[in-house]
Image 1 (cartoon, rainbow, N blue to C red):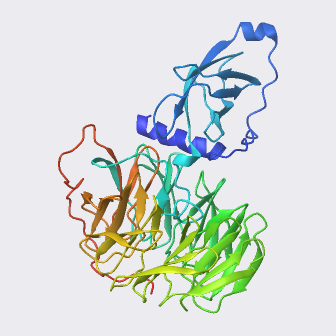
Image 2: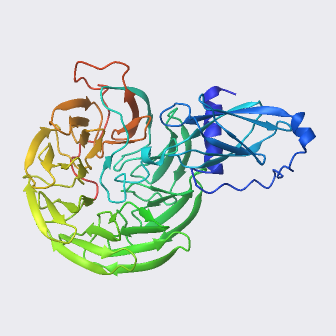
Image 3: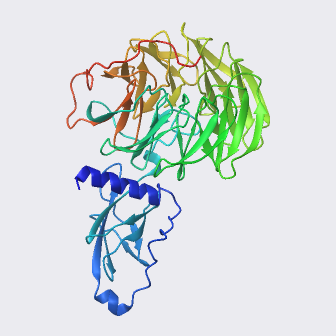
Length: 490
């Protein structure tokens, strides 16, 4: 069996057993639970060597606790745990370590050695906007340009919203409703799920434990098994859903074109509550504390109680709210498409400032380091003060910006209809990177690699071995893409 094929199968097996869950996976029915070995049998057995790796940083983990066959061992300074067992056989192994999610998976143990990867939750990208507050900023990943391209893969159609990344797997959907799981290590497809009926899709999925949840433009909420991509269940709102999921305590919060806001219990598949806001909703929900924030086509920002759906307050901007608010530092930052603006409110509903650009602002803002970053149809990426709204810098992206801005490791990224992604130093506004593919949202990733999103292709990049003295693009290969500068849903 070829190494890449074997690695893909092991990745799938690991996901099937645990998907990074904090709950141990059940032992399959065909695998009987091993009886506790007798002392004599243990002396005559074999010693297993289990190497524990940080799956993102690719370094060995010292002090990890490894459980198997009713026994446990602790990884040493080289990341290796030694555990004596009666004989070789497939075993369920659970690994825990400080700062990492517990992982349980079935290991073949055809040999005496195995390497297991565990992952830090703070280095993942589990939903659109990175956090439930939709900050669009990954505060823990440390990856900066210059980059080199490691792999790329076509995804069969327009990528309007970014991939999620969790436990070494990227989950990406195209506009045709096809969802793919892709190995971050190898760039190989783990599974593909084509939504029945081929509905359009205009949002990112979200990781929810062992499920991957996504919404479709024919009004369905669909839950997939993260390990296999098989559909577990679906639920219909009866109206197109453009909101990306945000899941807390097993509840998915989202809006729909019918003007309703929903809180859907993923365990019971029943609506805990819903509320009519009275105008079309394309915005995703931002969830901060006990409050959720969402905009509508009447130009209103709503703050509601997450537990019961009661309205806390409403405020207005100067045009439709197409994109998603970001909440940070006691403020809510709201883009307005037809208002050509970004407006800041306090989390109590007081308007603080407004920046007008002279072009549509479909772009959802990113917030980091006391600054807000967003794009406009005037072709510029803006960096403004979160406190005052003062424009600190303005950088050309070469064409209209429709997707969200994203911040990783002090670099603000934006994709434009000029088919490029720009990376700008968030503090100074100096252009650090021009990547030769792009369209909507620019970047997601994990602690190992970033994913740059072309029109219909993902590119995995990682820092070069040596600093570059130029601002050359990572790649200049020309992509064959659509030239239509309008969002597909207006």
